[in-house]
Length: 125
Image 1 (cartoon, rainbow, N blue to C red):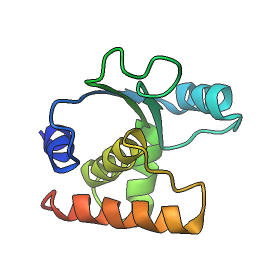
Image 2 (image 1 turned 90 degrees about the vertical axis):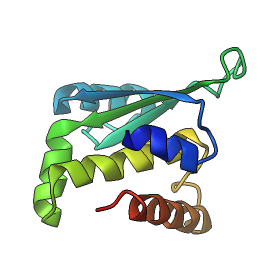
Image 3 (image 1 turned 60 degrees about the horizontal axis):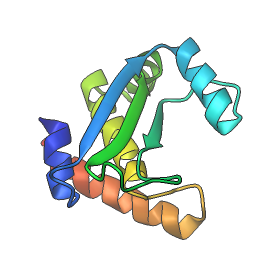
Image 4 (image 1 turned 90 degrees about the horizontal axis):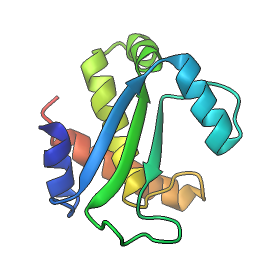
């Protein structure tokens, strides 16, 4: 329900997104393979709208992969529920699929962070 609501609020109500929950070892492998960073991370997004044929299936937005152990650690460290952490990671991953990028520069990071807060504020924490 949360993801479909987020898609509507983001202007992509008919988009399809897959979500995969994995362990740290698998996440580390994905992070190493696709980003060249040899450690686990909390969330990765894989867009289906990039590359050579981005419009073959325009409703396919992409994949969000979440490390459940990392989400659990982050929730514990932040003092909130794992479900809230997963919501945060879903929002973050979805925004990446929608083209937001916090790693380019500080201005883009601020834009993405504002959008994250806006979407999370509407989830009813």
